[in-house]
Amino acid sequence: MDATRRATVVVLHGAERPPRMTAIEQGATVRYTTSHHLAEALPGADVLLVWDLRSTALGQVWPAANALRWVHAAAAGVGHLATPELIESEVVLTNARGIFDEPVAEYVLTVMLAFAKDLPTTMRLQQRRTWQKRETERLAGSSALIIGTGPIGRAIGRKLRAVGVAVSGAGQAARDCDPDFDSVVALTDLRSALPKHDHVIVALPLSPATTGLIDAHALRAMRPTARLVTIGRRGLIVTADLLDALDSGTISGAAIEVFADEPLSPSSPLWDMPNVLISPHMSGDVKGWRDELVRLFADNLARYTRGEPLLNVVDKRLYRR
Image (cartoon, rainbow, N blue to C red; front, side, top):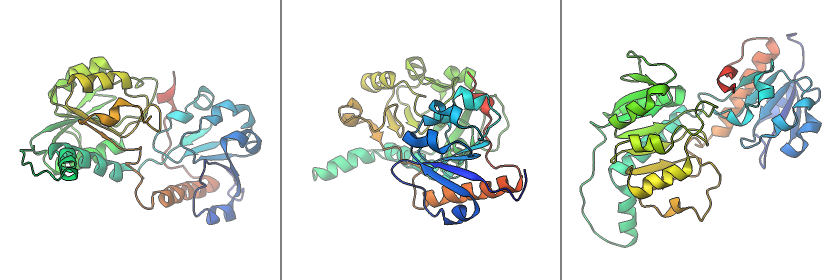
């Protein structure tokens, strides 16, 4: 593209706009909008920054995107944007891959340690001023299956291996040689791998092939002593099946970071289950994360205006139905 061209960027935001946009505003024409007014803002714009991670408005107003060439999601997951119109178009889709890898990996290690050391019970006993000694578990020597071998899954694998956990992965293709996993099974063979591990971590993006992947059949394949940790996109786990598995003792416990409907309803039985750890979709939200997201977009925008290859291009073929 002509290096002198000034990009027109639409920023789709929710209650908060992205911070520190001054440099971007100086180098591009920037239009800020919410989902309700996206159709009015898109005509003539060649770049869309999706800052509102819950918005599905693009698919509804796609005909207004008459000049769009590039969509950037300020998130690792892009399932909410993967409409047939975008997937089949020539528009390039990028994401914020890499920003959240280490924070999410730290979260997974934290909740696994919390379960192993029975911290939820310790905190409940402390609130009751009760001194009750107990035996706990070690992570070292246990095994984990990480479903999803992308950058976040790999960061999790490295953290777990560092504390002595044997780590396997489940990805698109099986392989025996991998720098971050002892072995990798194909997702098509997931059911046969689930009974072999003490911990199952779901770190997949949502796609037509992965929707509802962790259902009653998958949960029944896990060890009764196994625990589930989910940091993947909403829709990967069948919530009703998970509730039944936790209530019946089919699995030992779960740390849940992402829910099909957010925020989680106060009436959900999950809140009161002693074998469940709940966090409000915040495992990657560490201090400075918004600034990092803007810096990544600014870097990519500079590449775009110079006609250079963009970072973090998403393979849209994975989202074809």
